[in-house]
Image (cartoon, rainbow, N blue to C red; front, side):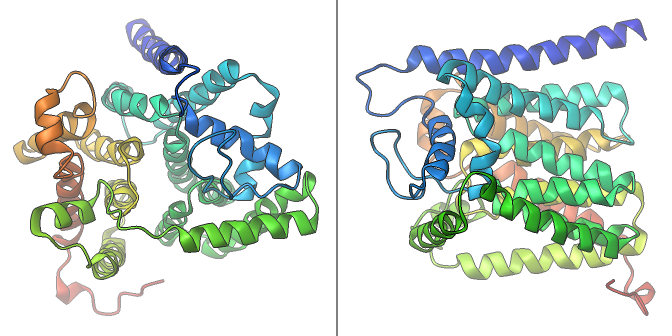
Length: 387
């Protein structure tokens, strides 16, 4: 037991060290003459609160402060208010520590998985988390919120589950899909009511720092930005693979519709035998789905999918050979390919052009979906209710 406690503290220390190292590395690489700061995303997040408070459209371009556009909700700008009190160095370190420690805590609180396997999950996703932190992104926090929602569902804490899901939604809209998990559990109306309450409260949060007119202005800017944020981007996703491998560049809406249909079918059928194992599989597939069906998915986004893949694999008592191969491919292509541990020539010639980072997660998603559907016999579906 004492040896196990030492291992846990060592992993926690690794998470802290990686968060600080990712931050310090970005400081050292940023030069005054560079047009774009190495921690540009953090500057976008931090500046948004100032623009909100000063009634300045946060969704317009602000080249004097950062490159690119702010694409999150006005409520997320309020969540970033404490960071506006810190200088960039302290703020970035704190932000990366929040991403790292929240994910560590979420994984450690997962039910039904041994402590040894939780350590393996944490170590497995650590390098992918580092990729997220080196880009000062929010995906580690989003993954933690979604895992926390799953834990709350399992503990029948629907109020907390609803809060965590809505917090993730106001960071990244795709977190809303996590709400379908409530169909596995009891007290569904309680979840729906509290989800609506949290949605309204978080939506109105900016009014603490701005007026109704100011919030309306920001919301109009957000909607306009989203409307204009159309591009030919296919992301590191299933869309990227279909485009680069087969030249299918104009089928996103059809593939997305098919993906949603498959996700809902597997939800409906897997509820027939909703054991803890089945619920965990579906949750893991959901984490992966959010990334591989996202045409804006970038390399830092994959901490969400990698967490799903790790939870799926290490929750299994005895993974078969094919599953071991899939998780090994995830480690090599998804996690290690963007790092200096991976041959640069192979990365530039094959991994990046052909979106190979997404491939293992896509294969795992379809493997999980197959396993969710496989045990169901049509003769047993008679009378099965969707709700």
